[in-house]
Image (cartoon, rainbow, N blue to C red):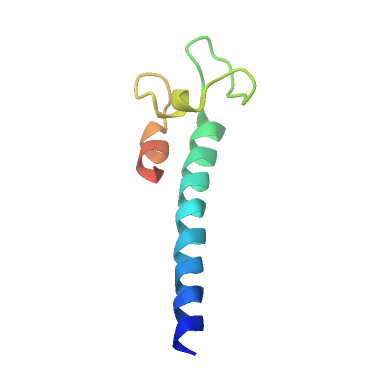
Amino acid sequence: MQKRRQRLATAAVGIGGVSIILLGALISALAYEGRNGQAYRFLNHFVSELGEVGVARLAWAFNGGL
């Protein structure tokens, strides 16, 4: 019983961590506007551009999520 509870707690922490990272990336991507006014597209931009303070308005959400 104790082992099962530990496994569930570990799984919950792992899922929570991944969720925070994904949520920060999603929030930043939705609000992203590049230097030329373009929207964020996964095929055109690097993920690191989401955390670039001079470019992304919500870079703090991406960087904080990581």
